[in-house]
Length: 241
Image 1 (spheres, one colour):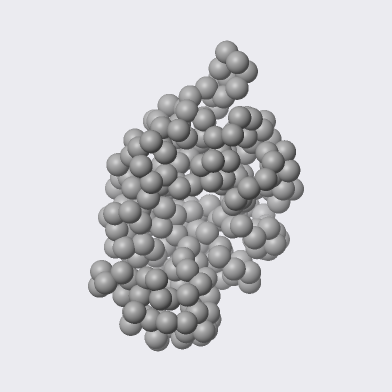
Image 2 (tube, one colour):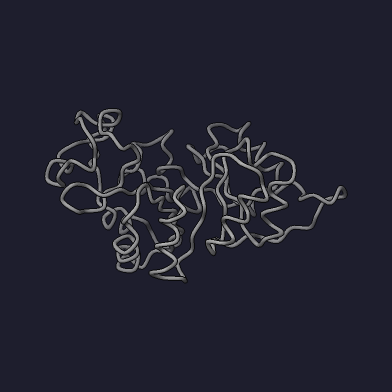
């Protein structure tokens, strides 16, 4: 996912992004339309997006599973932490009464068709080696992202060529851009309110970082991000722009 170079506007800031040049990333496989983080969501969203975003954490028996929450109860009939559940238990649960199972990371990556990239969000520490192995085995185009700088550092130390993005929630543009740069990231992933602050996108672009912003829920969100000049829109739906 490389940033498309754009000419600055008359005011010196990044001009409005052309939608055709912006990467559309289906958040959790377009969670606003499909059962999130499932193989079905990946398969159904992929024809409509440039990339799908999925979340990964480790279960009690060691497998990497695609699941956003730390706890099971919001999305399944199960209870307790994912980290305390064995894979044999998790594989029997379904997501949001959809009949779709919780997949392992390797299963999810194999479901991604050629030509569609994957943004794998690392939800906890200690996943770097296994996540990289799964991506290599699937021969997938993966961008790893995380709120955890040490998780990104572990990815870098294991494979410096793996594309990485720093997820951020708040802070000043200079400090966040510096943190992403120090980690050798190719992108920074801010929330909408931060991505649309004056100067944020320009600061990231000046450092050679792409800006993929989360999470657009409707067309108004998408339009606001396009106006800010972002490189990617992480969206709950594929029909926003």
